[in-house]
Amino acid sequence: MPVITAPQDFNSDDLFVDLRSTVGFSLFLKCEGFNFAGSVKLKAARGMVEAAERSGVLRPGSILIESSSGNLGVALSMIAASKGYRFVCVTDSRCNLTTRLLMEALGAEVHTVTEPEPVGGLLAARLNHVRARCAADARYVWLDQYRNVEAWKAHYCTTGPAIARQFPDLDVLFVGAGTTGTLMGCARYFRRWHPSVRIVAVDPVGSVSFGTPAGRRLIPGLGMNVRPPLLDESFIDDVVHVEEADAIRACHGLARRGFLFGGSTGTVVSGATRWLTDREAHQLTAVAISPDLGERYLDTLYQANWIHHLYGEDVLGADGLGVDELGVDVPAARPRPAAAGMTATSTRSPR
Image (tube, rainbow, N blue to C red; front, side, top):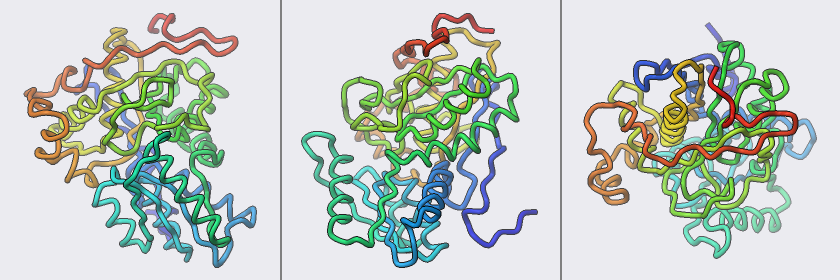
């Protein structure tokens, strides 16, 4: 039994849910929500903080500040409390109440931006608020999760190897695309050590990360209003875009099997199911990464009035689970160009 003194010292990195009986494919869900921060963002938060401390940028008396839609803010709130730093999280109206209260309970100061910028929307407004704070007070240290290479390095060193150990014959990995730290860390790891593994990015409709039009997005976690600076598409084989209604259906379908996950997980599972269904890829072994659990979304994703008001009365009309309820009605995966010396996966036959 592990014995820890700091909350960031514990993280379960080897728990997978077998979804074969649920989706009809060999799809395994890597659960990243079993730590004291409750999400995959603990890895990036810890990596960025420790790197800033080693470099001397972050020192006693510093004030951490970061833009976050929720999970990174919680992780940094926890680490800041453990290490004795002040922390200011700049978020927006998409951050749910439970997450804001959790950050405040951990001692963080939460600033909620409500007015979007004409270009870049709420994210640009959050970043402008961070820049203004840093310009006004030299004590502020902005880790900048959007550009900080420590965010993807954390997953190169932990998440990728953990998946490879458990699934040495893995065929395809599905990773949600937000700031793309998790995506790029895993993609770089598998390109270097297991290049036959296909990397499929899962992005919500309305995100501009892969060149598609901007649109309304209400589920926090995945997607961006600007192109992610960390994203290098040469490491990505395919992209699936998922409607938020399909992500919600996937969440509720999994909940009816006893697994309560967050919206990002619903997005990734819906996209993975669609990709595998389109290819009739029953012989492939696939892993999808689940960023967090569902308790923080009880007043949104799992609240009937919220869902019906924003997505319509019939969004949860299907009975039973099945692949239709996991969102396979979304557009088919868009093939990505092949990286140098590598065949595009859309032209490869399932093994």
